[in-house]
Length: 248
Ligand SMILES: NC(=O)c1ccc[n+]([C@@H]2O[C@H](COP(=O)([O-])OP(=O)(O)OC[C@H]3O[C@@H](n4cnc5c(N)ncnc54)[C@H](OP(=O)(O)O)[C@@H]3O)[C@@H](O)[C@H]2O)c1
Image (cartoon, rainbow, N blue to C red; front, side, top):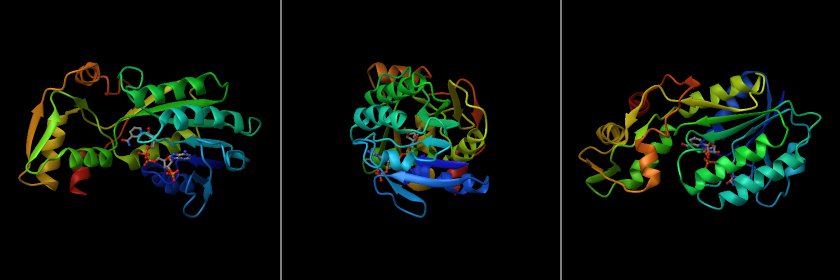
């Protein structure tokens, strides 16, 4: 099938190319940069290039997002623009990449992702809303940023289930050829860990000598994550553990 990946230059988007092509699909990767082979340029924030990018697409894997910019403009209004620009006669399946807990964790970016899910559910398109847990590499980046010299502070009691991004890409490839769920499905890593356990494993491999300090974090968002709102309740599981990821 003709598959368009939005966010094709992103961490997940880049990893989708090989498994989708391996499954026999023809793949185009959309982003503002439009980089790489099969790269097409379009901007969800303005709609520029969107109709041309979507022309002919039988499957859309919608993995574009702008968490550090304006997710209400890119993720929510951009998803609305995508819904309007899609070729309804050709489209067989739209897989949206969301995050486990967007419905339960009070955090602005998550609210935007949840709103984008609602846009898709109301669109009448054949959709699957795939909520995924944090990618291993993303966790690495967060820990690197959190580290202050020899001290690595992490939120006390946060419960996580990080996942290998390559396994997410393989899972999405399986969904592409399956019937649309018309609803939310989840995918997460193989094991539940506290933020402190994740940080100790990371420090042992990547920042020897860093001392992990579990710190109480007040607020409703933190409470939700402590209560398990970031953990998948059903759906598929990856096999690669965070420790295996760290060992490379
Ligand atoms: N990272 C995680 O741990 C994680 C966990 C669960 C779910 N997710 C979800 O998985 C998806 C992919 O995440 P990721 O970490 O791979 O993201 P990423 O690396 O930040 O990539 C984001 C992609 O979106 C594109 N983009 C941003 N603004 C755009 C715009 N205005 N128009 C068109 N394209 C735009 C970017 O390309 P340009 O900058 O070139 O436009 C890039 O290709 C996201 O929806 C995210 O919410 C991520």
